[in-house]
Image 1 (spheres, rainbow, N blue to C red):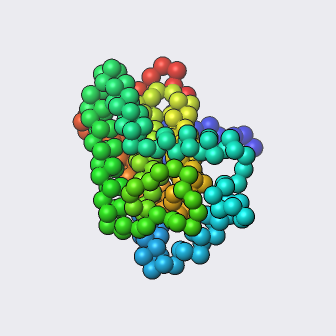
Image 2 (cartoon, one colour; image 1 turned 90 degrees about the vertical axis):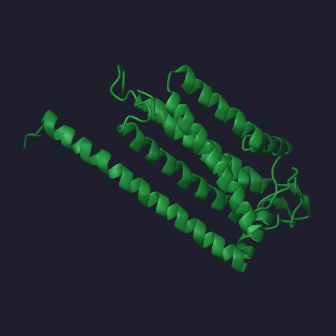
Image 3 (tube, rainbow, N blue to C red; image 1 turned 120 degrees about the vertical axis):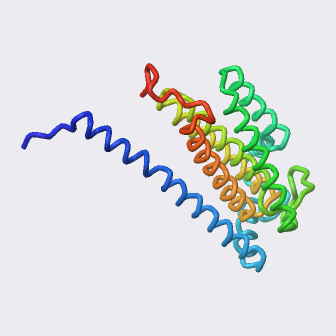
Amino acid sequence: MPVRKLSAFQAYLRARSLQELIPFAALALIAAMLAIFGMLAGEVLDGETHTFDEALLRALRNPEEPADPLGPAWLEHVMRDITSLGSFTLVTLVSLGAIGYLLIDGKRAAALFVLVAIAGGVVLSEALKHVFARPRPELVAHLVDVQTASFPSGHATLSAVTFLTLGALLARVQSRYRQKVYLLAIAILLTLLIGTSRVYLGVHWPTDVLAGWCIGAAWAIGCWLLAIWLQRRGRIERSNEHGNGAG
């Protein structure tokens, strides 16, 4: 039986339908992330996550010496380096670098949007820490210095807010599909590694990190949707999605 080829118009309609479904899928994902965050927050306040948190923290340490994390000595150094990528200083430098790139590229509105989106995420992270005021884990030794409250993890939240927001927005203004995928993959990988390092170093309960990922990802996806809405109305520079060499 011969395969029927789609006409150019039919292919256009199919692609258009897919594009229209993406915002709804993104909104559903935001709702799911917020629901998980709310569930975690409620269970943390009720003390129902203690068994899970304690078991996972202990699993990452030498049973005979809680100050000694599992793995070779170099792994601890690697985790210290990774965790520094989610610090306020590094996040600020990365954000300023991205904003500078957008300004040089002539995308001033996009640069302003990135500044507002990341600054808003920082404010959200700090506000949530003050609201919940969860103490840091004292079950194992802290391998890096910490001074703020524990829930949600600031490093997990800020890395998700910063790297996922930048990854999504920078991918939005790229012309090649491979560039988009690469930027998003790097953003997700950095976010996961930074959050994991906080648990490994003993400065956060696992549920702190899970909550940080959820609220940070929800914020980043929301910023991405807002950026698309503003682009379609000419408030932010459009991407070059149909430029030469796209694919």
